[in-house]
Image (cartoon, rainbow, N blue to C red; front, side, top):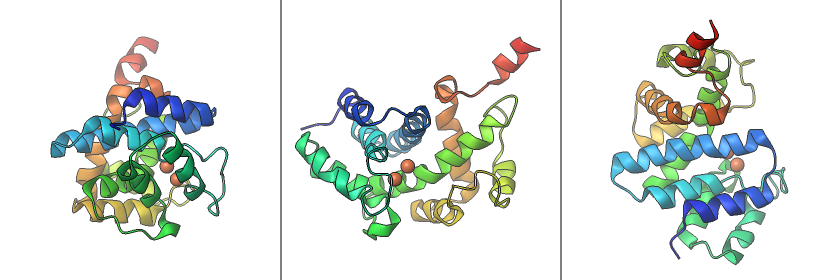
Length: 194
Ligand SMILES: [Fe+2]
Ligand SMILES: [Fe+2]
């Protein structure tokens, strides 16, 4: 079965009601899709995988269950093993090898999408004009978006063989088109409000 966005969204929204988790899924989807497009890979399948990576977090909020106990549910719903394995591989505690570009991209986009999103939320123009330099500065402030694991941000870029600056720029670019869905202001809305 070829996973579609529609199917992944349906699965996700049956198990996830929290707006912030849905926004996280959308952000990781947009970034992972960006990398799929860049590599000429299957955007729909990569996007579906990203949408699903935390689909069970609301019902399995602890690491003894997330994401491993979500896997049988995904299997039941007919998702291919490739998708399920990639979903599982985003979790550091499962120590699975990230041996495909999809796995590397999902892992790299997971924490950084959340962090870039957080950076955008505290700026009047959201992601517009957000430079890697200021994202990196915030990464060095432990109290800012404290839930984001900095070591995973750095390891993600390294896994993709990218400079952190480039990875940040890519994620910012990927998230800009969905800024309104992420609850972010833009240069345009800032202008309209002034
Ligand atoms: Fe997760
Ligand atoms: Fe996540």
